[in-house]
Length: 352
Ligand code: GGG
Image (cartoon, rainbow, N blue to C red; front, side, top):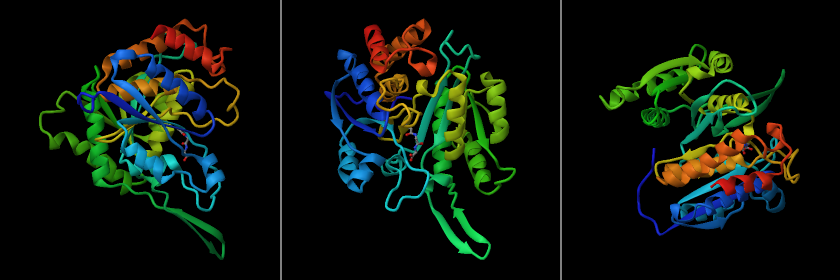
């Protein structure tokens, strides 16, 4: 779904590479955008800071200036962040905060296998539509000492408003796809109040706009069984709409079916802003080795442009990536290749 068709003289793109391989793959996405020439308005890139490493140096993971600058941009690309697994006083995940600050309520993650890709896995063509602002990611956690040891709790927030708008996004997206099939993912046999509200609200979306979604078929599935079926028969899925945590996990799992997490892009989308972001994390184990797969970020740039209505530019990027993956001679090690990041970027740019 394109966001708006406003004619722009230039396209102001915020770049937030953040941590680890984010700093290698976001420049790759920038190069791909630059290669489009006149298919898009002249891009103007704004380099912005965020991340855990920034926090360790400055005490701030998401500077006010970054948020303010992003509000002035047309769109943005975010790399990856390495939040520590233990609580660090004063630190909070900048990507979680940014999604909330900019009200980017939908994380849209298409997982598509390219024909004859090196994985040899079955054909997958699905989109995980993940609610991006609430669920357990509201990060309201507390811990207390009891006579039996420490006791930790977390708030899980599900609202009708957020469930309705993510549901609407899923149904709108379904209308643009050949199969037009939405599967609602939940666990309302156990979490009957929170997941019950999510399920019921998403299901009600078509009733609010009578006629509009008549062509869309609806299914629903418990999250555990959905993961099982995802591995057994991924072809049954078209759009999977899920609360934040399930959506996060399902999309990483689905990436395994198409060869690598390094292939899977996403956009964080709101009604007025879009931010591309590879699904993978900061991968500290390979950071600085020049072997990170740039494809997820390059495809995230295409997805961002597509959402802004620059379909031809987005197609040129996606077709070039498809060709490189299909050919299979210039691939990074996650896909069984021996190529460096810049060699994959060069191969893609040549085809754009
Ligand atoms: N680009 C996705 C990404 O950075 N994933 C790692 C992740 O989920 N990070 C959450 C965090 O560190 O707060």
